[in-house]
Length: 154
Image (cartoon, rainbow, N blue to C red; front, side, top):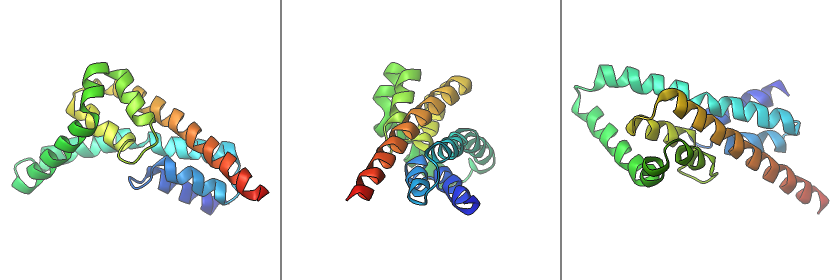
């Protein structure tokens, strides 16, 4: 069980699935619904402080290098294209809804990058992203749980 919880935490922290992958993984491995959602939500909420720290650290050290600047510009343009209108127009609520939607390309990672690009105050951005992660985790958890129940009845 502990091994499954660790895998759930790591999957929920990774940019390849976030809590959208971690929670279903836990439920498929017979972890209690509450534990699966709780571990997935906590891990996914840690993305904001970790990624902001990485952005700050790397930008200070590597900004003089052309390859780094190109990468930052590429990711920034992509984030503006995906998130831009909603976050600029609606601020806090736009960021929360963007993170909340459980689709590929949305989530805590892109929300953190967008908050950094659009210079949203860090406390407000953290709150918006955390609320979005909580709502998304509950949706994913409920959908996965109900889907698993339906699958078991077949």
